[in-house]
Image (tube, rainbow, N blue to C red; front, side, top):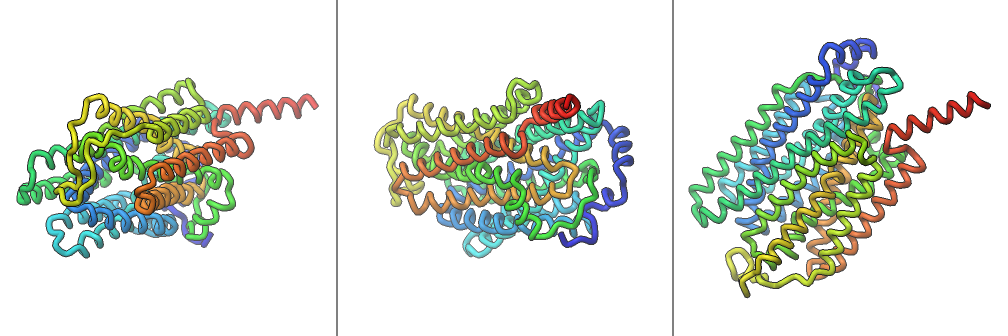
Length: 478
C-alpha cells in the first residue's frame, strides 16, 4: 500500500464504537434505502445508455462493434487504477459527485449519436465511458458492501452473529440491486426495438429520441446526488495503490479462486449479447426480434435475482448450491445451443438493409425456443452476476481490501466480455468451437469455486461458524 491518507474521511475519523452507535441510530432501513436509491440511479442511467447503444449498433453495426471494443478495452485496463483514483477523488469531492460525474460520460456518449458523420466523436465518447465505468461500478459495489456491513452490525444480536448477518445482508442487497438494475436492460432493448420498428428511417425523430435517452440517463445520475451517506466502517482503510489491486488477485486465494467464474460470466454475457443474436435469434426470427429476446433475458434475470436472494435469505439453498445450480443452468443452455439444429429462416446478406434476408416464414415453436433459451440462461446468469460480488463483500466488508476486491470483480468480468467479443469475431464461422470454449470456461469456474469453498474459505458463513465452534469444543474437551 502507498500509506498516508485514508480512503474515506468519515471512516478515518471514526472508531469502531462510533460506527456501531451510528448504525444503531440509523437502522437497517436507512441502508436498504441507500441500496434502493443506487439501484434506481443505475436503472435510469442504463435504461438510456442501453437503448442508445442498441440503436447505435442497429443503425451502424461496424461502428457499434468498434465502440464496444474501445469501451470494454478501456474499462478492463482502468479497473486497476480505480481504487487509488477513488481514494483521492472521494476525499476531494465525495462519493456522490464521483458517481454523478461518471454518469455524465454516459450522457455524452448518448448525445454523440446525434451526428455520427465523424466516427472519431462517438468512438472518443465510448472510450470516455470506459474511463468512467470502473469508477461507477467499483463505487456501486463498494457502497453495497458498506451498507451490508452496517446493516449486519445493526441486525446482529452478538459479536458472534455479525459474520452470518453480513452474509445475509450481502445476499439480500445484491439481489435487490440486480433485480432493479436488470430491468434497465429490458426497458432499453425493448424500447429501442419498438422505436426501430415504428420509425423506420425518420432521422429527425431518432435525434429527439437520443435527447430523451440522454435526459433519462441524466436523471438517473442525479439520483446519486441524494444517496444516504455511508462510511466505510470496520478497519481503518488505507490508500490503495494499483499494485494492491493486482496483488490481491494473485496473493489472496479468496479472490484468485473467484477469478475463473467472474471471467466466465463475462464471456457468457458477451455470448448472449452478441453471438446468440447472430447464431439463434436472427436466423430463427429475424433481426427485428433481437431486442425483444434481449428484453426477455433482462426481465427473467431481474425476477430470478429476487428469487435467488429469497432462497439464500430463507436458507432454502446455500451459496455453494446456488453456484452449482446456476452453473448447471448455464451449461444446459450452452449444450442446447450446441445440439439444436437451428432453422435458417433468415440468412445473412450484406445487401439487405439490416444484413439479413428472409428465406421462409418462421414457425411459432422455433421462435419460442429462442425466447426459452434466453430465459434459461438468464435464470442461471442472475446468480453468476450477483453471487461473486456478494461473496467478495462477505469476505472483505469493513476491511481495506474491499475496494480493490470489487475492482478485480469488474476487471475480470470485463476482460471475459472482451475476450469473447474477439473470439466471436475470429471464430465467427465455428459455432461449435465457440460454445465448447465457453463450456470449458464455465466448468473451470465451478471447479475453482468448489476448491475455494472446501479448501480455503467457506462460501457459507453459517457453516464456517459451525466449524469454528466444533473446533473450539474439541479443544476444550482435549
